[in-house]
Length: 73
Image 1 (spheres, one colour):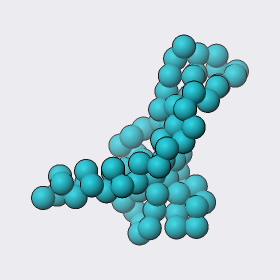
Image 2 (image 1 turned 30 degrees about the vertical axis):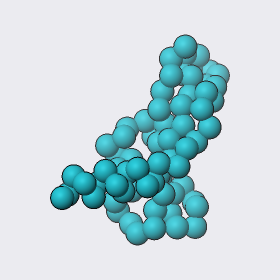
Image 3 (image 1 turned 90 degrees about the vertical axis):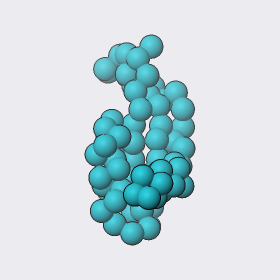
Image 4 (image 1 turned 180 degrees about the horizontal axis):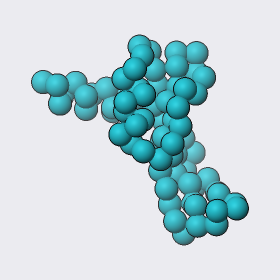
């Protein structure tokens, strides 16, 4: 098994504006607009021809906002 985190950033209407495996890029896209949401899911990428979802997407918006607020002080 090769678990890989997949991040998705959605606008205020729920449409995806970015998706990928980079947490840093996900945060960058998340910070580009108001009322955005950020989700993470885990995929098994062991077989490149047949990725399998391990964990359905989880809304981590509040966690990210809290962390960004604490870091900014």
